Amino acid sequence: MKTDIKKILASKTKQALSSNILHADAIRQNIVVLDELKNLIPPLSNEEFEQLQSNILEHGCQSPLQLWQTPKSSIGIASENSGDIAYVLVDGHNRYKICVNNNLPFEVYLLSFESLKEAKDYMIELQLGRRNLSPTQISYFRGLRYNNEKIDKSQNLPKGQNDLLANLSVTEQAEIMDKTPKGQNDLLGNSTAERLADEYKVSPKTIKRDAEFAKGLQRMGASLRNDILTGKEKIDKNIIQKLSKIPENIGTIDDIESLLAISNQKTMEEKTPNGVSIVIQEKSEEILKITKRFSKSISKTDLQKIIELSEELIKIL
Image (cartoon, rainbow, N blue to C red; front, side):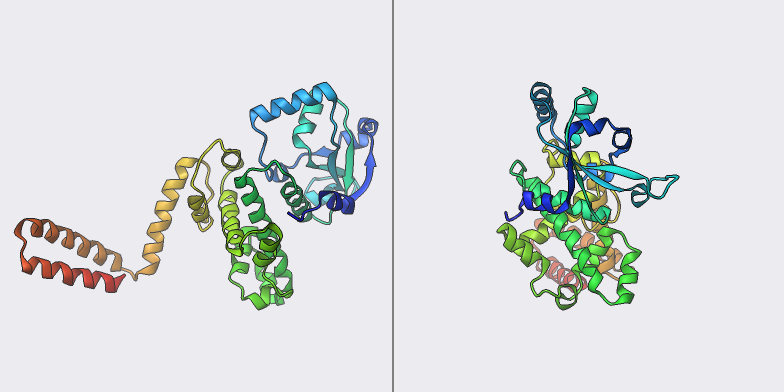
């Protein structure tokens, strides 16, 4: 992969602070953990967390935590003064938890981002540059990156289309961008999928499948999504990709089968005019009835009827 963590970090770092500054009230009281960022990254397994904690207790926190210094108003935190600062945790959630619980010092980097989305982009790139990700997690982060960069391209659309996109969710925007002609959504020449495919040494189709996989996982609650990404729950990747086309959110594994069944039924109804699905059912039942009779009678009349009904059914479908 071409992701250069040191280069990315250098471009976003405002200054490095030593651990003793953490004791200043201005920072200690204003470190913010946003669920939206925390849940973006798959958590450690219990065993991995215990090992990390053991290492930190023995050797101290060796890696600085990364904080986004930003006005509280930019992340929706009410404040008396418009200039009040929050320090949003971007990288090191597990280390932060361990150090706080055990009253241990740690170093931090202060980072600068223009928006929450830019902070997310940074987190995704940081994760993809690491070597301890599972294939499932790599697929997820590649898909997230693709979806985010497709949204960036919406800024190049005509004003009317931008106004429409502004009222949609990120996932809905990505779905619209997927359908936008190449010349409109990629002024640089290569498509987003082609560019990322070249960077990660995979095919453009793989990148697009990753995007569907990421969308499907984003339909789920954080707990279920993390269980899948850490391997605790096993669900076929193709099923998760299908979930990307379902607007409903998914809370539990039990929801998946029922939502897919509902989606398949809706798809069938959309493909056929009103009342046609009833005709399909009736003809299917008639074919089944005659087939059972034919298995005993071996009648040419029954066989001909089965053929006729089947041809009619094919035309309807």
